[in-house]
Length: 200
Ligand SMILES: O=P(O)(O)OC[C@H]1O[C@H](O)[C@H](O)[C@@H](O)[C@@H]1O
Ligand SMILES: [Fe+2]
Image (cartoon, rainbow, N blue to C red; front, side, top):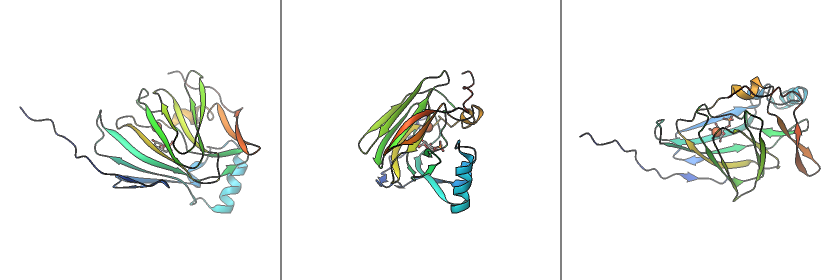
């Protein structure tokens, strides 16, 4: 009988500022990649005018030993602070392509909100500060939002076969809720451009 191949355990050095020594890859998103993400198009254009399309807005390090079912992807996400009109800086956000795949997000530094929505209209927003985590069940669209003035850094872990569906938010005119500035804090506001999600 052929033995089942095993992957090699790996030590990962995780920085509270984001970044993994021993990562498989790093991916970076720039201001120019965020076209159409913010509701206030003019505010985003103004930011592009000031900072240029090549300004770094978030970056992700991850470690993966294989893509197969049963394996995990472990990584850090570092979302820089920012405001576009009333809206705080966000990641693009996605639903897992294999929609039932869950994900853990543990806050390493900064202050953020995990904005969560389902295709059938449920919504949730969970604030995270260092030491707090959110266990995101499958079938929830998720996006990180930085509501502080320092980088918002999370450690995440999800199934290696999950994949990301980015179209779901774009096709719906954005997420149902926006995370906007409210005094020194944040508040949720309904997004008037949201047209509802496609059926599951
Ligand atoms: O993929 P985005 O929505 O741009 O967000 C950036 C990253 O966020 C999370 O941390 C996910 O686990 C990553 O897989 C993802 O790539
Ligand atoms: Fe995810």
